[in-house]
Amino acid sequence: MKQKFNVITSTCVPLPLENVDTDQIIPARFLKATTREEKFFGDNLFRDWRYQSDGTPNHGFVLNDPTYSGCILVAGKNFGSGSSREHAAWAIAGYGFRVVISSFFADIHKNNELNNFVLPVVVSEDFLQELFASIKSDPKMLVEVDLPNQTVTNKATGRQEHFDINSYKKHCLLHGLDDIDFLVQNQQKTIAWEQGL
Image (cartoon, rainbow, N blue to C red):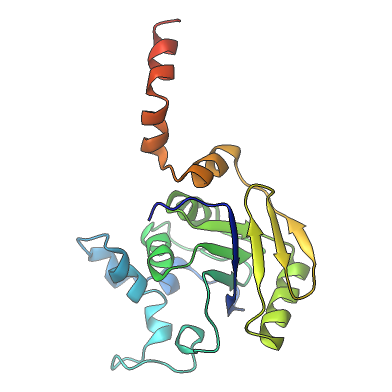
């Protein structure tokens, strides 16, 4: 889902669990899908946590709790560990999350999120715990993620942290470009370089 990023301000969905792996994000049985339809993968995000074995919703899981909403997922440390399946990032994007905040991401999953126009924001563990506490205190509290300035702000407390992002990926997100779009946009520069101009 190609969408330009700038500043996103949203309520948050809290998932204060550590070591959430890609099989929990999207179970392996969905990897056989012959489509990359966003709705299909979004509907099956955290499938085994969201639904009972008979297919009825698990009302104790946060995505089924109407108290929480928004396009920012706040997750515990070591998010996206396990296998390198890109389908996990497809599911996160397909559900409608634009940002995932955690204190640590598995490298491959982090890059898969970036490639699918989901911004992974790494914050300190202390800041992450403050976010969880603020959301618990007021589920309607807002978080602002400012990609141009690379800051994330807890609007409930005013606390702000800076986050790092690869400059190439930042450019692509700001302009809504995937890798192929970027190459096409710079085709003439590439041709000129190859011709030694």
